[in-house]
Length: 114
Length: 111
Image (tube, rainbow over all chains, first blue to last red; front, top):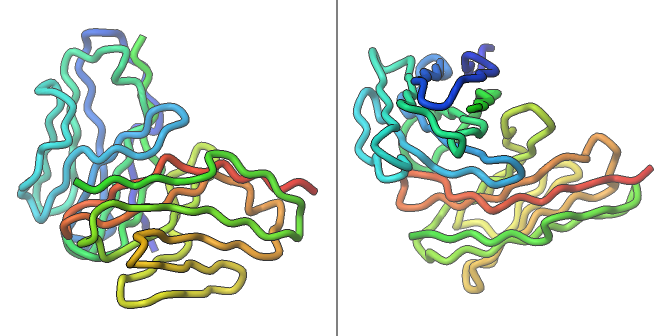
């Protein structure tokens, strides 16, 4: 069956530009999570959605970061005015619901800000 | 909030030997502990998980143990094979909302 998909797989952008990263969760999964993984580091929680609602935005690093989810499915993570420190792998995961439930990860989007 | 510490950061073992990776957590309310394997250029893949009402779980060559009193849990891989080489992450589920990850262990299996 189809897993979590993310696009683009790689993105190179110039400092100051805006980027949009997309996540398609597993069909039927109501919970969706975004994480960031810097080179050689662990995973840093950014934000989660239950349906289209994002109750916890505390993990977003700055107000340049925002995310939305429409139709309880696809989510977009937007980074405005990118900085070099934003370079990382952005991972999306989904689960059946928010709670003690297995999270399945996508392959990630590798973002490089020049 | 929850804090997860993972050791060692790198581990090298001979093929056929066992590998053990250990994690500690800080929030006694955490009740779900998954382990993920991440290969180069890929997203993390769940390999085994354990819930707080269980002390040990096994799946073929992989096992996880949980000590709630001491707040630590461990991954055990027996009869290691070259394809076990990867980065392994432990995690703890905090507040029924999000996973908090350890820093990862790079496991190398030497033929």
